[in-house]
Length: 108
Image (cartoon, rainbow, N blue to C red):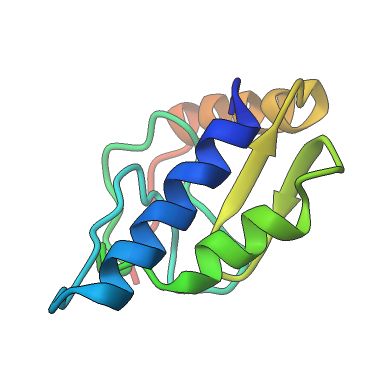
């Protein structure tokens, strides 16, 4: 996130809206997560057979709030938060992306 306070404020507004209206789901985007807690698909993956549903919970907002004063990449079971410059994490993502392009995906 480039503007972390604005991102957290947006999440707070979504949680407030969902709590005050008959909202059944708030849908996220850029899920790119596997169903294995703390594990995502490499950047650029076009095949994501085990991606979880788009429904978000307040756990996302709580995770963002918990790292508000700690820039870096923070992996939680359901979300990875990139807060500020995260060069090491981004290099790791690029390596995984390139490795995935070199190796064919395995079945199963």
